[in-house]
Image 1 (cartoon, one colour):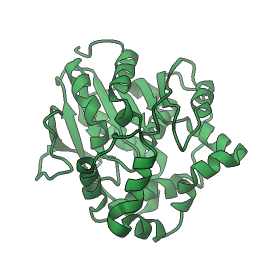
Image 2 (cartoon, rainbow, N blue to C red; image 1 turned 30 degrees about the horizontal axis):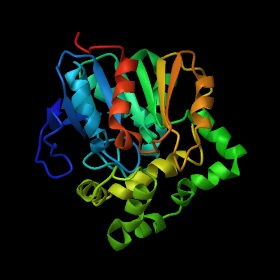
Image 3 (cartoon, one colour; image 1 turned 60 degrees about the vertical axis):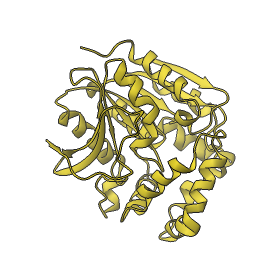
Image 4 (cartoon, rainbow, N blue to C red; image 1 turned 135 degrees about the vertical axis):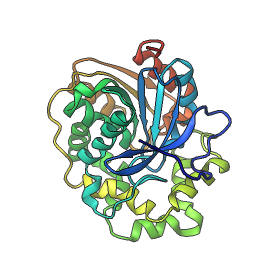
Length: 303
C-alpha cells in the first residue's frame, strides 16, 4: 500500500535525484521512502546510518536506477518522516530489520539486495545472518559485523575512546540538549571534522537540521544506541549471503581492522578499502561507493 502526502525540504528530491518521495505502509505504520528506477528492476534497498536520513544516499540513487535497479531508500524508524515510537524496545535490531523486510514485502518482492551505511549496515548484517533467504546480496559500507564491534570494544580501549559518543548517548536528555545547543553546532562540527573537506555544505546541513528538528526525532535516533549498545544481539553464525565490505581507511571512529575482522563471519566476501575516505564514505567518494555497489550487484538490474 502506498500513501502520498505533503512534502517539504527533507523529502523534496534534488534535481539530480530521479524518482519520487512517497510513503509505504509497513505493519500499519507509514514509512517515508524515496523510490527510483524501473518497477520491474531487481530491488535494492539503501539503509542510512546516524545521524542521516534517505538523503545520505542521494548520489547513489541515480546511477543505480540508471543501471536498471529498482531502488528503495527509506527514512528508517525514528528518522525524519518515518514513525518514532516512544518505546525504546521498538528500536531493537530485530525490529529494525523487520521494517526492512516489510518494505521488501510492500514492493511486492520476495528478496532484495541490501546496502547499509553505519547503523544501516548493522541492520543489513542482521538480515544477512538471520534472514538470508530474503537477501540477494549485501553491501556493508563502513559497518563492521556486530560481533566485531562487541569484541573490538572489549579488547581495545583506544577504539572505545574513538567511539565514546555511543557511551555518551546512553545518558537521558543530556545528549539531546547538548546537540541542539547553538543551532546544532556540535553534530555539525563533528561531521565536518570527521569527513573529507567539502563533503558536507551548508545547504546539506539545512536538510539535516530540518530532519533532526522534527518532533521526537533526535531522541528516536539516539534510541538506536540506547536500545542496542548495552545489550547487543548475538550474531555468532556465519553469513552465507554474497557480501561486499566497503571501507574508508581514514575513519575517525572505527579502525580498518574491523573491516578485515568482519570477513571472518562470512563465507563469500570481498573487501574494498578507500585509503583517503572517512566514515562518511558515500559523501567523500560517491562514485567509488557507487562503483563498488554496482560491482557487487553484478551488472544491469533489469529483469
